[in-house]
Length: 338
Image 1 (cartoon, helix red, strand yellow):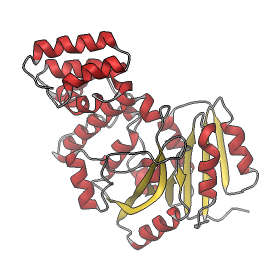
Image 2 (cartoon, rainbow, N blue to C red):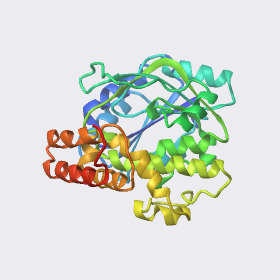
Image 3 (tube, rainbow, N blue to C red):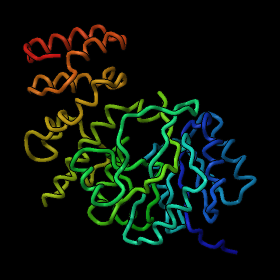
C-alpha cells in the first residue's frame, strides 16, 4: 500500500557527523508539526553516522536513511531533492538544532503566502558546547524587497539549514549547481530571486552552530571566492547578459575567470570582494587566500586593517607570510596607515 504524500520532506545530508547528529535528529522528531518524511543521506561517513541514523529510523517510520559512498554535499543535496515526495522541503544540517515550532511556523506562512518560494528564519548562534556564540551581524531580510537590497549590498541572505522551499520551484532551476562548491546555497538563492519571492521569518527558530571543523571554516577561501563569482553571475543575468557559469560542473581557477566571462577585470572584481573577508580568517590566510590578498594589494586594492593583518599572521603562526605581506604593503602601499 502506497504511503500518503507528507506535507514536508526534511532533507539532511551528513558526512562524519556523529558528534552532533543525535541532537539534530531529535530536534526534527520533536517538531509540533508532525506530517513529514525525514530523509537522512549518509554521504560515505567513516564514523558512527550511519549507525546513529539507522537507530532512529528503527523507531520512527518517518525516517528514511540513504547510505552510499562519498560524493560531496552538492551531489547529496540534489539526490535529496530528487528523492523528496513532499511539495515543501525543509533543509536541516546535522550539527544544528531546530526549535519545536520551526516547521509549524514556516508551513503556516508559506500556506498563507503562496508567492513566497523560499522562506528562512532568524537563528540563535551557538558554539560547539551549546553556549551562545557572539556574532556581530545583522539579521536576515524579512521580505523580498529587503532580500533584493541585501543582494546589492553584499549582506547575508538566508541561513541554509533554516530554509524551507517549494520543491518543484527549485527543481525547475536545476537544483544546486556543482561548480559553486561550498557556496551552492548562495548561487541557488540568487538564481531563484528573479523567479520567486524570498523572505525570512523574524523569529529565531534554529540554533545554528559554529565550530572550527564545520565546512565553512575548512573551505573559507573557496567559499568566499565562489560566493563572489555567484554575485557577479547574478549581475550578468540582471544586465541581460548570458551567465557563463550555468553549464559548469567545476569552477575554473581564478586566473581564468576573465576568459570565462569574456572580458577583463572580472577576476580583479572577485579579489576585491574576497580580500576584506580574508583579513581575519585564519583558514583563509593559511591557504590560497593569502595569494588572493597579495594580488589584491598589487592591483591597487585597499581596505582597513591590511597592516594589522601582518601582526595577525604572526599570531596565527605564519611568520614568513607576515614578512611577505609586509613587503608587498611596503612596495605597493608605502604611505598606507594602519
